[in-house]
Length: 120
Image (cartoon, rainbow, N blue to C red):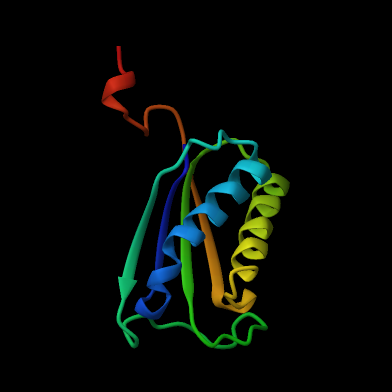
């Protein structure tokens, strides 16, 4: 059950539904997670609120879309890279420049998730 947080500037606000679908489908296809495993938070920021390097590492950024993925531990580095690459591909298909996407993946394990309706 990944929890995905997306921080971006307000001019991209209208793309949220398409971005949500692109990110979720990329993780479902790349990581093999269920398509209905959808937990995302979009946070909009005014231009000038997000600070980032325009060139590190070897990038040519004109804007930034920060994507943080909190996922259950156990995905191999190859699977994580495959999912991340699909996220970038699908966001690029929406017109978001590849260099403008920065993804950070965090992992946690047993006992770190709680869904009260699933607790017995």
